[in-house]
Amino acid sequence: MDSATIYFSIGFDACAMIIVAVIMVNYYTIKRIYTRTEKLFQLLMGTLLLSALLNMAYVSAYAFNLGERIPALYYFIVMLMVIGTHSVGIFFMLYVVSECYENRPLPRNFMYIAVGIICAIGAAVAVYGCLFGMGLDTSALLVIMYAEHYAALALSAAYVYVNRKIISRRKQANIILFIAFNVLATILQFIVQAQVTAFAEAVAVMLIYATLRNPKDVIDPLTQQFNMQAFKDFARRFIASRRKFILFITNFRNYGAITAIWGQRAEELICEKARRLKGAVKKSIYVYRLADARFAIMFSGEAEFEEFRQKYLELLKQPYKIGETVVPAENIAMAIRFPEVASKYNDIESIIKFYRDNYGGNEPVYEASREAIEQVERREKVDYAIQRAIRLHSFQVYYQPIYDLKAKKFTCCEALVRLKDDELGFIPPDEFIPQAEQNGTIIEVGRQVVEEVCSFVKHCKPETLGIDFIDVNLSIIQCLQPDVIEDIKGILKDYDVPRGMVNLEITETASAKSYAILQQRLDELHSNGFTISLDDFGTGFSSVEFLINFPFDIVKLDRSLVWAYMKEDKYEPILQHYMPMLHSLGTKIVAEGVETQEMVKALDGLGCDYLQGYYYSRPMPKEDFINFLKERQTPSAEN
Ligand code: C2E
Ligand code: CA
Ligand code: CA
Image (tube, rainbow, N blue to C red; front, side, top):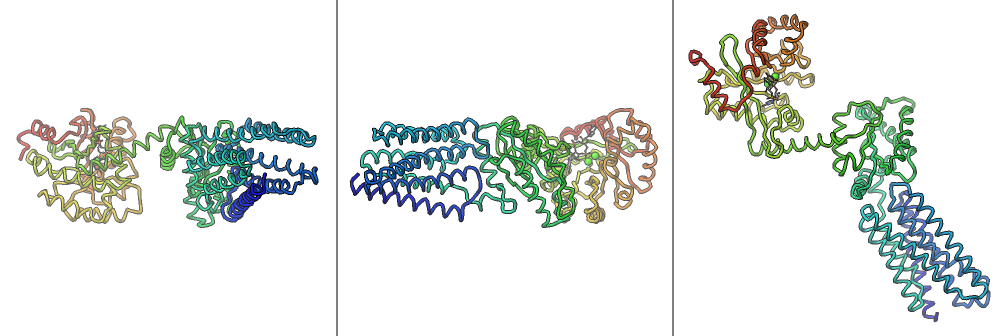
């Protein structure tokens, strides 16, 4: 080494130390998350700092000709420099592998390899030291040391390649850059003898540092666990790697009620839950807080999950407390298996959604099923189909005739909406109406049905075939809209349809909150000339009070009640008691679900006014319905 090379080397080492020191200061003051990977990154930084320092010491010792002056000290410094330089490769590999195994315990055999390499370095250094001490040629051993260093780097590259789907692109690029810089520095060292390795590595480490997560972005401030953002990012990468894993999700079923009572203090339960979960998993496994009291944990193996499951079941026995008060927090949890049950990130959201709406089980850890995902996907598709049909005005309305026992002919009918979708085919109203009610589209669906019915009345003139009125189903959601009456009146007016032609059917719901508004709305409808039926009587909580307070013109006995009446004797006295009561209120009675001649007889005997059911006809398209009426209505009835 000439003096220029010496200054050159010392300068680069000093720069390396400054870079690493700055990163470390930054790291410890700003970016700091305690994960295994980051601990290893800290170790890597520390080793690098030390290695640069030792390298500087070595170059200085060389410059001062220490080898000849104090050989023992010189020998010692060289030893330390060799160990330091080569440890960087090892710690780099440890860091890379940990990165590949983020959120999972490190593989056992990997630990053996790491320990093996460190022992090998120790042995090599010892032998190197002896040869050096004896003044023998050490260059062969130096080659072995380099080989070891590059073996560690090559192994790191291999790990990155195998796990390329798990590690972010930027991080991958920086890890590869670290290796490339090493190669360049080694070449440079052989050409000009300058020691620039530490500097090159420091630059690469700085780039890696830039890819470390910012705690503010990924840590939940309340529980100090990872947040939803981190979960999304990690779960997505895990799924992309097509690895098998088990996702555990847990929540408090009654968290809403708990916050309603405890307010802000309910957060104590969340913190406690986070602590318990974190305590039940291996250190390397992360706990993610997804929302309120919902947490997730990912397990990469069955055994690991089973071990946790046992601990979780134990935890369930401990009560949750706020202060000294035991809070009856109900833990619910489920396991989602990838890729058997779920295969994409959206599946997680689907399953969460499904169990939020449908959770009824009592198992402490529910096994999420493929069906749950399929049901949610179906729901989403049906939602789209509804929106499509609204846009294209493609709902169809079928008509089911209703037989008037006194007049002995069909004097009314029920309009029933039909949805045929190009992709999904026929979607039964029992499926899409409740969905439309949930997402609010029912208001527009209902409006289109009324329009279609009015258009039918205007163009086909069913009144000339003996039809006095048409039943239109009015959803409670629709009924509670402030402008519903104006809306319906407007449509009727557009088509010149008299108000008496449309009879509105509503189903009683048990919601007391809307009771007053409903009553007011029904009164208004009445005073605006509409008649109203109470639909599905006998299914819900139909109370006498409801019947008395609401001005129903017609009550429709639900088909389940009608069928029960036909089958079981105990229903007979009940219905026989109800019939005169309803009649005395001036209400007409329709029996639904009439399928046989025997039923016609029995229901006529009971005192029903109208009968509706497959015995007479299924609901049919308007053309068929008109033909049906033309064939069935006796000429004497037509006037
Ligand atoms: P709903 O109002 O109780 O309508 C009667 C249902 O019973 C109809 O089913 C009809 O096809 C069926 N039905 C009639 N006679 C018989 C019979 O003898 N046996 C059997 N097994 N079934 C019979 P649909 O058309 O599938 O409608 C199901 C429900 O969807 C309706 O029940 C109603 O709640 C809702 N719905 C249908 N159209 C509309 C609409 O335009 N608006 C709103 N809001 N809801 C509607
Ligand atoms: Ca109905
Ligand atoms: Ca009904």
